[in-house]
Image (tube, rainbow, N blue to C red; front, top):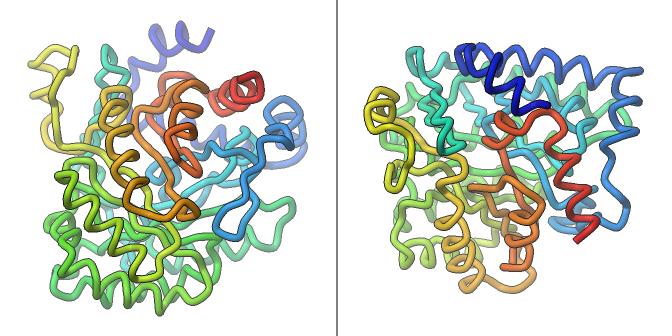
Length: 340
């Protein structure tokens, strides 16, 4: 039913407007008694629990950063069956992001192009919401993804990340450093090992006991991915998130004029499936067996999640297919995993 609703109704709305409307419904689903009714049909089976990062995840499948940028929908997303929610990307300084329009559907590819630009209300506002979440039970597993504030020069990025980590790490179940979004000028340059090493070191110090991961781009050559993975291990990080959106437009089925009209930004969704598996293999080969690797990119079905787990992923995240498959997406995947 949802595919028909999407095709004939939801696809007619501006994508960013549709996202905000969906988030409003998700927030309602997180409030009793709606949350009780929702969990009754979506809760993962206890056999699907994953123990990683010193935490217990109800399911290996979670929602990736970018969906809930301001930590406002955590309770609803938890009720919908996601095993963890990674909020953000959050910056130390509030920012509006890039000019609209900045989110575009590529429906034939089941993909999205976004150039949101880390639009969020800032670390202080996120901290207030996370504090409120910590007072509630049951409490979802919440990762916090942090990025560079746009007004901060790249040369001053370390202090900016440290400010966010200091504010948010005590309230997060894990912290993720985003140096791989294509939508903040100069950000991906921080992935170079010589600039990444001091950043990881400083943020790790600020994060204290909170598990720390770094999120990388899929567009890096494999040898650079290997170098970053080895660096993460050497610096004592707890994991890697592989991976962010891509700037590639290769192999798309959407009309070229539509793709060109969407313009610059990160591509996510089904077209990333092949590269996602490749990057996962490169990372897993470069890190110890007990090192946490979260696989992201092109995940649509329980088969896709199981494929990532079989390839060495500790956990799996998705986002774009949520737009195409509807509110019971996590339930579908959890049920599929239980039957596999």
